[in-house]
Image 1 (tube, rainbow over the protein chains, first blue to last red):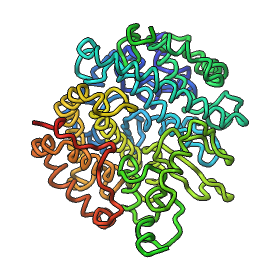
Image 2: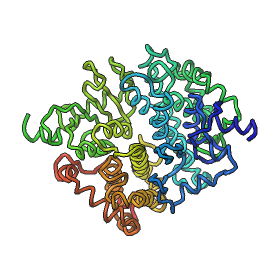
Image 3: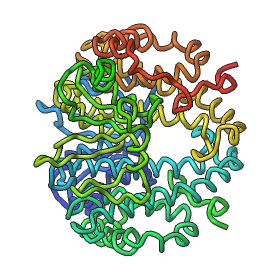
Image 4: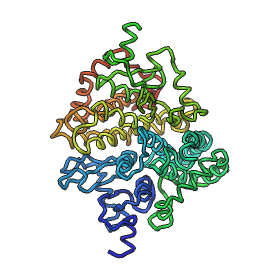
Length: 270
Length: 270
């Protein structure tokens, strides 16, 4: 394996990865929340469809509607991302799980990204779940009627949905993140959402804010001043965290295109 | 406290509930997923807005956009349901958490609703999360553009969204639940989704199927035959489970009305 390949499949460690991320190739998408957790923790993982020759095949085979589970008792997968943990069930049996918040809860516990105090892990989970709801709603701005139809077929509805998203949903979610940072200010001075060190709530909120800013640059620019902890302390701070900074500068960080976060100028503030 | 009040606030136990469910009064909504977990386990809980004179006030105060957390370190709440666990942080400090899947993960572990084998709890979580996604999508059929506008203001878009939901989303989700039951058939013969005993994946999927059947009775009736494990074994079996059966026959089980699951005949199969 060439050096560049190895760089691409791991986040720095030279150990054989036991974590296999199975997600669509070439887009950040919901896989990005999982990648950021690995990269923040400096834990090796194999990004199957981007770092091996398998391409999209493992994803398609996993989500086939003929799939009724594997022979070691893992149930079928509804949608990617999925995470395979080699020997995760013991005795050489792999554990296979899906649903982004579920994968993050699994990894958070193992990679040290759930805080330290009693109750922290549930606060981390609730903030991440809320950020993932915002991710879903951002997706729905360009696909408000049907995920199986093209944007062009639902553009009229998308214009209405995006108007509502910009006017009421962005401030509702960003305002919540700001208040969470405020509530934790004595612990983290705006740097982290829960407790005094990095958690997957931070990486997940950072990624959603990054994606929404890509999709709606004018709207976000106009509103930034209302959320000073979020935009002046938290957001720039997270992207300077060691693992995140290295990752964002690497070619493992994929560009946005036709995934969840899309930039259609007509949907943004005019 | 009168006998009927006590019946209403607990699920049978006479112990003082340490679990306080904070959710909108008078509708099942997302609170129902939490209620079903308590009822299935026979664990006492206080349904604050339905079983005390406080009404909607505790919900409104919790989700106020002025709320920046409490004085024992619980961050603010984005939306109900929330769960207060009396002395959940120890030393008399209550733990306060929100997000339905997060509350279910917390309770599942404590009420014995996450299966038995290594990995079960993550399979339970992923199936419940997927059912909750279906719940969100069902909500969006009557509010596809904006949650702050009335149905009548987005009826045209709702007709399109509901058509897509009936044609492609119901079969996609129901087909997945059927395949999960199939994958677990040697363990549970179609009675349970994960492992060989009741989990919160079962109560959550049951409630979503119940709600979607209420909202789209003709569509679901026409499709039932395609999902024999789901409709002939799983669904009737779960509602015969001891705690669930008693609950469904009680006045604690609220009727559907203008919540997430709504029946608009024009959105159903014609």
